[in-house]
Length: 266
Image (cartoon, rainbow, N blue to C red; front, side, top):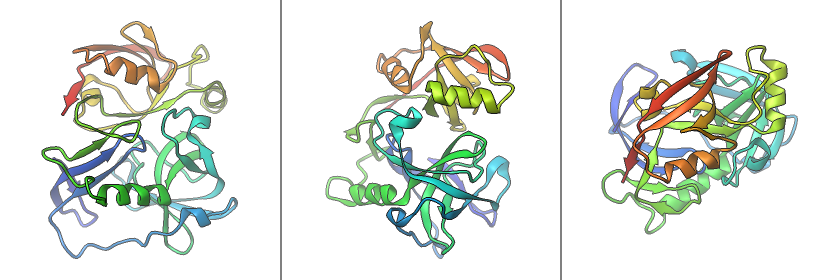
């Protein structure tokens, strides 16, 4: 159960019914009627050079709007270090701040053509194409895709249903050499000696990672002494069902060690 806060200040308990960790999408049901909707467009019609607008509420600042230009409509997940996702992301320079992901990316016709996902650095942001989200909604609406018992349906990294998995509560981005070089050029606080790791893009409030002290923007380099070179390394460690993880992170030029107790979801 999560708490959903509407623009007018009302809050409702929400039930997470379906989760697709491969693409970082979920459906949440609340008991409320008369809510406004945003028309969904077709991300397949999007062209490089089009103007887009990112909406969201970063740092609790509601109705924040940024504008940008589409740089790519088919940036493969492997290109940005997101292995196993098989998604062609929309790349734009519309500013997305930590905590702002999940808001719509709209075209100048007011149609949602993407879901803001992550920022690598200033001027480089990515959104999940709305066509991919439509496929997710179609899949969970099919026979066998409806909610199943307590906790709803879970889709794992390979897109298949699963019922048990260790949970940290973070969204990760594998730091490829190209991404590391770009971060070092654009951010004076990014450590020069980092050669690999994962960037923590989002931390779910109340999650094990949040309780352990991990913050958005942290770079995870080691877990239990093992060097982390990609998000797959993190998934491999979680598959061991360990009760406690000792995580080394870079934050604001400092090396820190935090301890996190993963939760097993069933």
